[in-house]
Image (cartoon, rainbow, N blue to C red; front, side):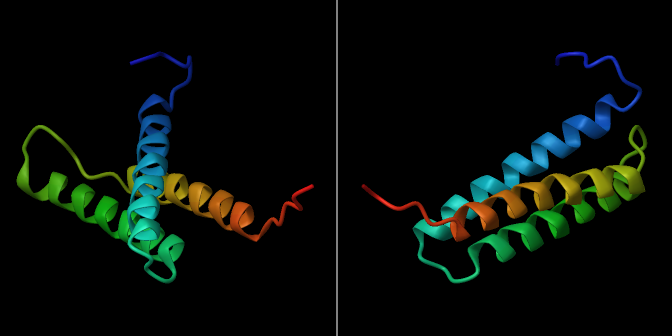
Length: 95
């Protein structure tokens, strides 16, 4: 993994990973013509990330649950959801 030179490497990776995760779920839901696909992708990504973090703390001895990882997961998904929302509301006039 590339090194960004910060003390928050892990949080950056969480943010990027859950942003991609949310985007991929959005594309699947959009292709299935499901209403509110952005909101469902955001909520699903946030819930999944939270559950994984909690289980990681409960079921493993080598990993810990981290509230900051949960926040990074949600922020990454929320950034993508915001970008998708803005993109979908932007009307481009064809010439």
